[in-house]
Length: 392
Image (cartoon, rainbow, N blue to C red; front, top):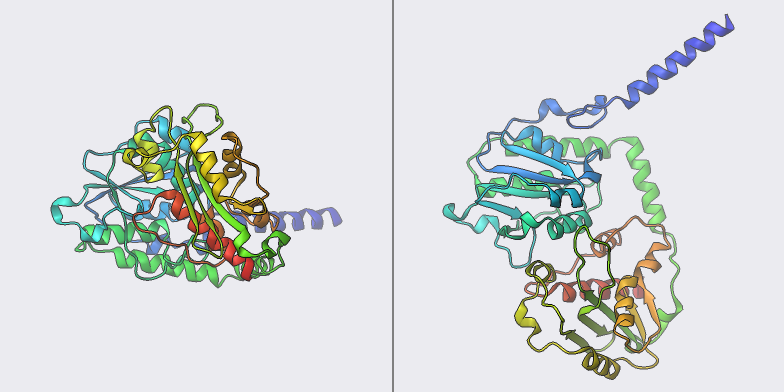
């Protein structure tokens, strides 16, 4: 009798556990929270190709699979960056890439003749998306288009780099509304998405997780004493090195572009270094530079001289990650006491993989710098984080 009772309890527990783990493999939500029945079927004219980083494929809050279910003309390819770069992707002749380059035209500003017939959309974190755009050769020749969101994204159950960042679903809907405003069903799809977000936010377990995350972020950080010094002795720097080759072993980089700013003053340092082999068009595009930007580039000797005139013996150099500091070592510049922002914030066990993600976690607005090179923009991000550390 006791054995029967135990086996019955075990079976009931197993049934309950199985029920909890059951998911809908279209929206990937638990069966009790499935919202596939409210997802409309949209007869879009613009072909949509979603390139999804494999790390997003099974994320319960990923929205790309909802887009694929809703759009009649949509293909989703999930893989890692290396394999996406090595396979032949079904990209059409008149395709455009949805990617927020500073000088990219807005989709809403295009005339009917300028609109792409296929829209390529990257699905992943900002870190993953940048890697895919950088390493998938088929994307390098595509014209880039951007959105101009005027209201914050509604995907509050996932962390976004800034308040105007959109989920893949929101970005796709906004893009298609700009390209084909007469197509029906987009508002209904957004309503289904917003309903899913609200249901998740109202879920007790999610509220507890969000509260625990908020408590974790509010813990005191290990504040370096060096940051208590006069701002005039703090120099924030960002450097870019020679790019590697996809699929090849990582080689030691040498400096290409080096920028720095002294806090508390308007002093800035900016230098491009002469390269023995001209940078590829892909590398220049990634750095948001042109070949003409290197017409007056300096030799390593000239760089060391100019840098020694800018940096002072008692300065503290602040960089985002170790690679930036290693660039100075590669060019044999004078050693300087330094701090690494990634290590300072990493001591708090935060889950971030890029400057953009860290800025979002800290609740800061990512600086927008139109027509600026990538190094200048990322220097501004690092300065923002240092100012935040010093005033928090």
